Image (cartoon, rainbow, N blue to C red):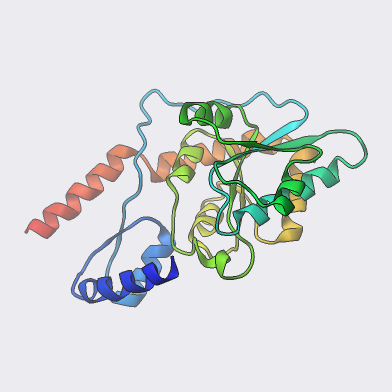
Length: 250
């Protein structure tokens, strides 16, 4: 991965230096690209059709269901283990207040499995795409996780998963875990569109906050939906793309 990134930058840099504008996917990448190459980058992300789409509050019941769907590579497995530890800790009095369900095609190590498939944390393995959508929609809180330590913590420094757009546009309360300087966490923070945890202690704090104040689930679900409508409306994205292409053609 790091070798591929090195060669990509080496070949893209000469092209970028001769461009006045480039397409990027998120604010942090725009700032980095413009500073590095002197461009005026344009943000172009996955567009969502908001026709007949409205925010739908979830029915909050106990225990609160946290759900993660996706890969557990590049240190995400360790982050999810920390979340599982935090959830099992708040349930340590015997009263199950929260549960974590992890759906992933990644087979965890025995050490990680022993932490994410115990108590109120459940490793559920692989599920089909259609099932994933239903699972996410039935969650109280969807989890976005990146590594918190080592080189792995930098893997998502300038990335932006389409999964984020889906979470936002579906009006889901998001628990986002990762270092504060990576693009996804920076995006959530700028837009106040997720509950963010940037270190181990913050994970436990966020879980406790949600349990003690479950109204945060619909509050941040609504914030997520409005963030998506501001930043990811497909008509706005399409118009932006056409405008830049017309300018380039001239």
